[in-house]
Amino acid sequence: QSVLTQPPSASGTPGQRVTISCSGSSSYIRNNFLYWYQQLPGAAPTVLIYRNNQRPSGVPDRFSGSKSGTSASLAISGLRSEDEANYYCATWDDSLSGPVFGGGTKLTVL
Amino acid sequence: EGQLVQSGAELRKPGESLKISCKTSEYNFLNHWIAWVRQMPGKGLEWMGIIYPGDSDTRYSPSFQGQVTISADKSISTVYLQWSSLKASDTAMYYCARRDGYNTLDPWGQGTLVTVSS
Image 1 (cartoon, helix red, strand yellow):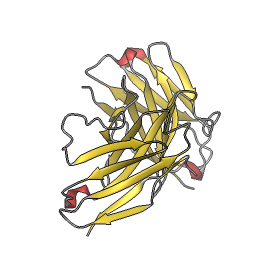
Image 2 (image 1 turned 135 degrees about the vertical axis):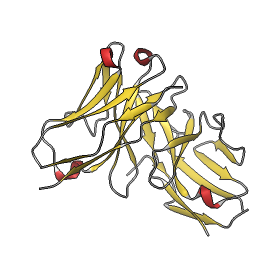
Image 3 (image 1 turned 135 degrees about the horizontal axis):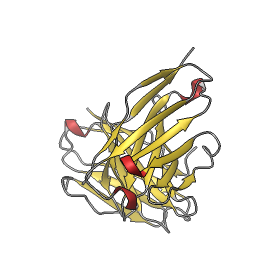
Image 4 (image 1 turned 30 degrees about the vertical axis):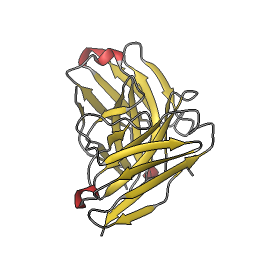
């Protein structure tokens, strides 16, 4: 069981705005940056959001990240069929020198 | 930005050993940590360990300590993940990924599927 908790599934229709939550203990979320990774079917994960709300070049501004207290969320606006994927939140544990992942959320575009 | 290219799919029997690879290109291999991540069938991402190729400093997740060995060969810009005695429960996709200065894992390799079956 992950220390970062995500809903196992989420869904929306094309054009809608959906949010995916990520919650955890204050030691992980409040005190560390949050990252979001997208894993399209059959592909390797790629980074969507780093350091809570920063988008790498090439990531559409339809994707946004936010963090407040001990929870974080990924918002996807103008939902498209190609957004159907698994989404993972993550943080970095300095004591381990490695990432901690949430359990993942499967997003279905209806 | 460099790419990470992983070795191909493997089919092994329980008890056999295995070493898979992750080769980097186009950037300063020695100065970036490379992580290994496991994804069991239909499951989420699990961090296994990380290595700094410059001096082979290696850290393991407590869940994988003693179960696998991570190593690097600077001469060919390659990082390895190896098992001395595979179990059926090692069946999974394994990804390597570079850790950047923001603790982001980017880029990722394409993954290596390891199947352990008698």
